[in-house]
Image 1 (cartoon, one colour):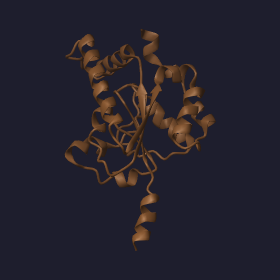
Image 2 (image 1 turned 180 degrees about the horizontal axis):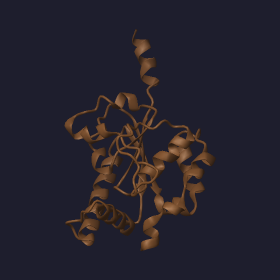
Image 3 (image 1 turned 30 degrees about the vertical axis):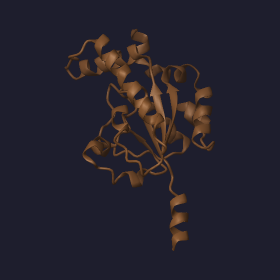
Image 4 (image 1 turned 30 degrees about the horizontal axis):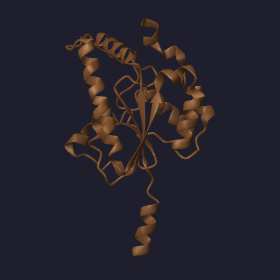
Length: 201
């Protein structure tokens, strides 16, 4: 019986996590992984809109990690799930995580967020300079936390470089995730026409 449980443990697959700050390209990466053959964990509750024409690929229960809702993680094994940087630290240690951490120019993140708020008839209550400082400190804290987790591996993905020349980064992602991805299919997802904030800056 002990041997059975040992074999069972070995068959557990890591959870592929797509993370980063809001508006950093996480939805695009989820689409790319899906195209590559990795099943996304998403409930389709948040549908596509003018701020994200291809869809958000979110899973609502992720937002309840802070409340201790982790039962769904068992079903996430071997799949890709989007989790914002602020919630990574809520992940329990009894699973293995392979994290694709999206990086994007800070000014573009802020511009994209402000545009989204404008589309909703809202406005930010924090000045861009202050928000940028808060985001940078937050990223430092999250990166430090990730490096300290024995059950977590991560790779940084540059959103800006991905749109300019995707193949080098896709090859790194493929290697990071086991070298079984369809890179050509992933490249088909890259759509520079959706790169709105670069045109505005």
